Image 1 (cartoon, one colour):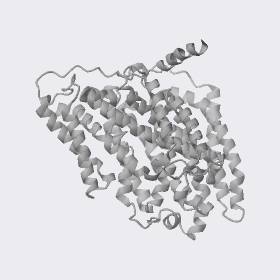
Image 2 (spheres, helix red, strand yellow; image 1 turned 180 degrees about the vertical axis):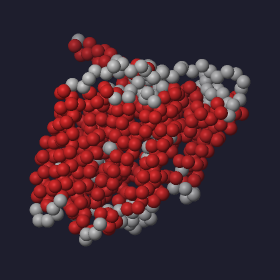
Image 3 (cartoon, helix red, strand yellow; image 1 turned 120 degrees about the horizontal axis):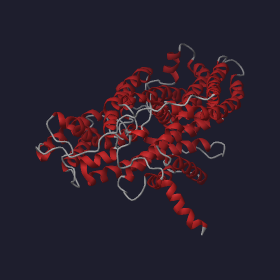
Image 4 (tube, one colour; image 1 turned 90 degrees about the vertical axis):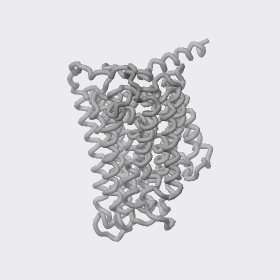
Length: 552
């Protein structure tokens, strides 16, 4: 009887995690910039940065490609979030999934959300796999570098890690952002500390010279292991722009920014793009190249756990684990929102649990690692035409004299589906014919979708003189209530957390300052202290961030 009563109670608790799944966010639930700064830093200083940073090395990028190409690409990503995604989200206060339903009808939304959720489950599964790759090291499980698992213990480990991720993802955006805000400063410094530790090895292998000379000789050499064509400057820049295309150009991050008080909060993406997709990718490349030298193995045979453990010991393991969690959590959260929009009788939390089960199964097969750069380009390309359709209807239609939401009430907006399908066909044609690389397809496909949808809608009824269908008003910015003063305990906790972070960089810097005899022994000696500093930081940081998030 106790078990029977527990199930409804658990269901009730899940239902209480309501996050305006089907209606605009109300003004009393809007959040300040601190949550978005933390969310972007946590999500994009991530487990995949270990993978992508190493892939740039293997793909033959040069120093110029990395240090300058990434600036261009990441800046374009920030601008896309700031001037396209965030303004639409703040204007409507809806998720993309329900706004697209208003524009495209239930059939188009069904197709989009199934594809969207499936791709996000695969991506979240990749993060879970990366986290498990770190925990496998102390358990003696061999590295999983094939597309299939080779040890049953790894499968069991993935399922445990997946259960934790699913539990966190059901808590909702505010909890995820707070979790990310606590983790992100420490994770970011672990990338820097790991790179610092490896610098003496890299200098010795390169024969000396300046920092850029060392990087060009042993890290970003412009050569690939198999002799294939190097990645190149513009491919690096384009990848940095489109690797989160589904979130910004594809508007999936409307789910996040619908909580923003102002559209300018899109600039919070700077923390993710330049601390994560710039500094962390560079540091991961340095760590990967150094780890390969240290263990005398080619970099493709090392996974993220190997790389981080060689540099930082147990601190590196936890850095990979937390980096995986802070990315897989919001990714799974988005998948839950997408599926919830087509399962109206289920709450977002319940659907997130169901998506998490699928994701955990996918995570047992580390196939995404082998083609991660191609995968992130592909999933963005498949989803971005839906964002282009929303951009056209939301912004262009009023300026062209067309009626927004002209297809409201229809099960299917046929011009929208036609434009989306034609965009995918165009992308396939351009890519398969060798006309354009996958990373370059975003602009022509996005523009083509907007133009085609606008034209088809104009001849299908959008020029009607009827008034625009009524749409829920956007929530006004709230009148901020007075904030309670920070407590002495909170201020002390912040000081302790900051001291722990500073020490986490100073210790590796001191150890790496002398590359003479005994260097590796000194590095090994600081690893237990790095772990102790991590424990101290999280103990103090959790207390401090409660005040910080509240005041932001």
